[in-house]
Amino acid sequence: MAVRIRLARIGSKKQPSYRIIVTNSENINLSNHIEQIGFYNPRAEKDNIKVDLNRYDSWIKQGAKPTTTVANLIKEVRKANKPA
Image (cartoon, rainbow, N blue to C red; front, side, top):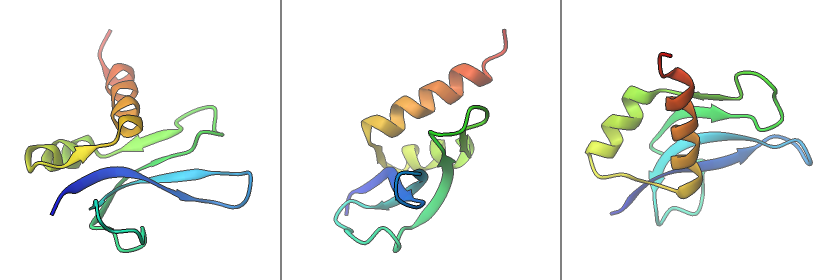
């Protein structure tokens, strides 16, 4: 069983927002995810990415693979939270 960290689209038509979820890679139905670890709203100007980095790191240590989009979002979050 391969575990993936990916985005699940929510929101209405032409107003997307996404949940960052941990799910089985073979699972087509995104409502049956293992855990929700964050939220991403591309339409918001401020605080559009919220993610629990401790849970993300925990899942990575357990062997979960993030999608490229999620990996790029996490890089942005870490860069924004880095002390100057």
